[in-house]
Image 1 (cartoon, helix red, strand yellow):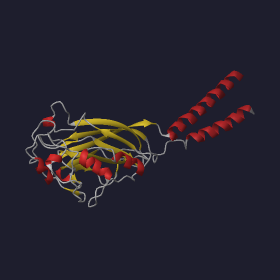
Image 2: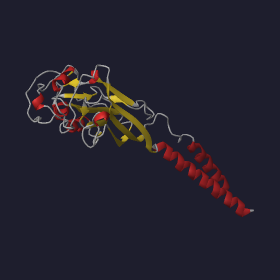
Image 3: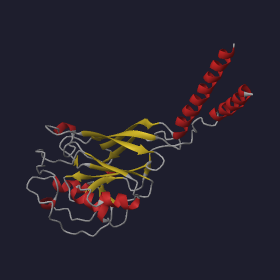
Image 4: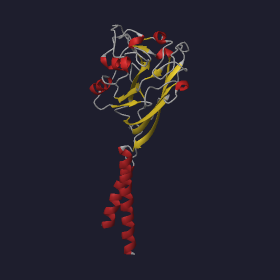
Length: 278
């Protein structure tokens, strides 16, 4: 009778191993590496530290054709995340946020000197609840120009696999918050300018890289003389790249391992008892 009871138990355990196989529809916990690169021509635009958020799709810091709110103004006018990060948390308390910086502004590779044109950071992401990406950074020198996505971008499929590997920005991708009048003396990243000074503009967010001409011929904080003439609508200026590695096994895969190990243990125990009776 003892052997028959074990036989019944083994049958049940063997069946348990089958549904415990991981579902392909499950999300994953991944380590997502994000790299930012300044691709802009020598002596042209640099970028303040890039602020990033991974969220459930509810965070939307600005919209084309609408007045800039405090979240995006903090980025566009001074490169700060002081209002941007609280806005992320208000929209999604479980969002993962961070800053990707090259120890200062990401400058053109031809002007690197002691600075850098690239930076990398890694974030642990739940692809189910943090699968949407939003970024923003200030384009400098400027008074209120920036890069960023005005709609959340989904990075993963339903299985947790990365579907977006890069975001490329060109001259036509530059946004103007139109919240501050373009006055070189009040701009960021220019020698002798006072970025804390501002004159209210009262416009709406729109694409506009032509405003960069305001700063031509002036010396940047990095020491190069600014020249925007090499930037056209199609000029590549910035790239965000993604790569991911699964960090934590899916719960179902852990269960499969545990259940099957129990089954193997019972099978071994049964064999030992049968051998002992011989």
